[in-house]
Amino acid sequence: MRISPLLVDLYEITMGYSYFKHGKNEPATFELFVRKFPKNRNYLVSAGIDDIIDFLLDFRFTPDDIDYLRSLNMFSEDYLEFLAGMRFTGDMYAVPSGEIYFPGEPVVVITAPRIQAQILETALLNQFNFQSMIATKGARVISAARSRACVDFSPRRDHGVDASIKVAKNTYMVGFMGTSNLLAGKIYGIPVFGTMAHSYVMSFESEEEAFRTFAEDFPNTTLLIDTYDVLEAARKVIELVKQGYRIKGVRIDSGDLVSLSRKVREMFRQHGLELLIFLSGDLDEYAIDSLLKNGAEVDAFGVGTRLGTSADIPYLNGVYKLVEDESGPRVKLSPGKVTLAGKKMLYRVYENGMMVRDIIALSGEKIENAEPLLVKFIEGGRPVREDSMEEGRRRFREAFASLPGHLKAIYEVEDRYPVYLSQWLREVMSRFGVNIERIQ
Image (tube, rainbow, N blue to C red; front, side, top):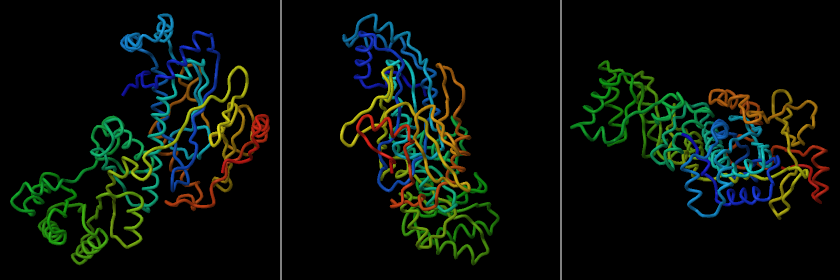
């Protein structure tokens, strides 16, 4: 889905106009970062870098876009002509999708002529904030599920078409088995899954007839057993299996999921059956954690509304700030919103395969025995590397395996992951009267 450069707040275009009138279009560096952790988060997952790359490489105002801006009667014709010919000619570094990051760390770095870099703000934040929020939520669900499979069931409650597609993409990246969303499956090649709705069962004269018909049409299927009476429906499933019908499992979508799943599992065991039990219905990491702690018998989860809307934390407070221009490092000193000056590089230190600390350094500064996390994706307006979903899926597995175990908790922990400033960066900040050694 192409992102128009008109996905921009008006003040970015008006600032660009003022820059244009006064000849302020020299190279400048802006950085995208998240100010602080949302509630109960101990890590964040980078996401949406692929969409940002596509946006930058396809950046252009169409004739219709220019006509709309002209209709506002705010801008001179030479500025509109300038916008009409604008393409992204800068550099972009980013923490690749699937990598873990922390507040205060630069996750997207743009160096470009000032007007270009300024106008990108809203679109970059729009793409990164939502997708990182969802990827982080999905990672928490995967962690809570304790190696049980999870499927995205969210599209009907997501906030629009674009959101539903990106929920499927980013939850798959962090370990979901697949999605119910066929459009996302088509676009990204994500495995698709589905069972049946209660309306299907209600459309037949009997529940048994509904089960038999669906099993004939879709062998090796999963049947929904909570339309009427869960235990009675489970008995019907057992009889159909004995009659030779190929049934893979059952889904329970309502009621006391702990008690019902345990009773259904026992019924299957008594008849020597190893059918899967699939649970769904207003689930998230908190509900899944509670189900498993209380002994639910479950092989897989369908996770929908609370996942696709990130119900407990529906936004991520990512920001995009100027950090350097032709005059040198730039800093914002507003109380509670101090930024880190200068174009930067992010490093991570590992010990025995585990993450132990991150270091935010100035660009060009080398940190011994540390790995750089910011990767160059675009140079001079040209792509130099891709950010694919499959790479992100592999990267997340590796990153999550290296994350200290206590940080995977679904509630906030006191022992936060340490993020330090390098010596050079501390010295630069001290020139602005800010003395800081670490972010957290």
